Length: 581
Ligand code: ATP
Ligand code: MG
Image: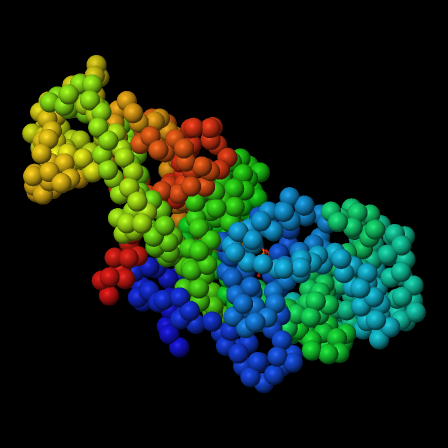
């Protein structure tokens, strides 16, 4: 089994990881189980999975792991994967979330075909299942309050006590349950509980609650129901209703599996679904909890669920991430049982790898400094050829204007630079990408004494194809023509958190807010880009030379004035690590 970087380690840094595997080689124990099941012709050779989000928030990158695993299993083994909304809790759910989840799964590249389901569609059948349990003496209506139930449950070291209502007859239970459904009792007055074992070492088996009374409208079923099933009851039975064979979920449900099995053993005759747990994805410096993400949105810390700093799929999409990069990342991290923290650098590595291949190159200056080329004819504009992609000649070339006045990056000029500064300095020479070599001869200061303009001379013979084109110069700068360039806004991002949560599950909102990175967003409003960039459509991605990969924002842009999000910089620690090994 190929070793990979997320196994059996609580925390894993890029530096500690072994060399990068090619896709399809990372270990996936779930696929191994399915392969074995197929060999034994279990479930008559069927493989059927589901992705079951609760529509109470937007999907995040952690969900992508589950989506890739579930839909990926169907693709790998010629099976099927359903999209099922686990919408059994009317209090927190909303159709906005349903719509966003559908869009996100599609965007990731997966297809549920005609199998889009809602657990709420099963409410009548789930009710019938509950009645069957009552008839079999396996469920009872309990009048204890929520606090009493908790007090009776016992602890990990002490058994629970049986409810005084546990011995009600099937007929009485049926009558009460029907009246619960008919709306005769207020919220919290009664619950339906499984009758299993109050002394079980597994707390989940101590007569768990299956149904509760909640007089609240549901986003799909309206006022049709005033009792709602709990997740642990609804989930295995929804799986069974859909013919799911492998119900794949995260490790926190491991202790719930005996209840899953108890329900299917007692209610499902043929080919009951089986639950398998895998380690959830956690990423360094990334929040992976819908509750906390919702909090950031509600508190206005971010501009919305699709803020490009959010680890939501809609945020990553708006930022410019590609579904291919995310799928590739999910493939590479593999699937194991030990929880681990994956370095965000790996996700960025997968992203750069994809963007490098597909993004055309352009030039843009983030913080412009004017350069006047004194020996260039004042009114002349020439158009220089620039390749769109250095590795793909088929991407063609474009013409970029060059004139007497250009802009370079402010930080690419230093009056008194340290050693090994290969950019522009007084008396120094640099090459302008796709253009000429220039030499700095003079500078102009503003009233505050800052350099506001640099004067240079250019070597007319140093253009590509010219006799001095091969002349050796240490630095190459990006630039744009001053007059012919277009003004643009660019947003640079850093991670939302300064560090990763020690224990993401136990994260308190207060801790979260104290760890927010105050520098997660920098807006550059004075940028200048080459003219072609004015026509960039929403979602179009480019590499801006020396600056990274950028994507035209899909929300905040006016016609002819795109706003660019930096997707990721060019620095690639992961690639260096891989090379060094
Ligand atoms: P939260 O982020 O609030 O913990 P959740 O896990 O309850 O949300 P669901 O809508 O129930 O969100 O998740 C749908 C599926 O995605 C579940 O099967 C769940 O196990 C899986 N999932 C959720 N978070 C992750 C994660 N970080 N890594 C892998 N799978 C995940
Ligand atoms: Mg959940």
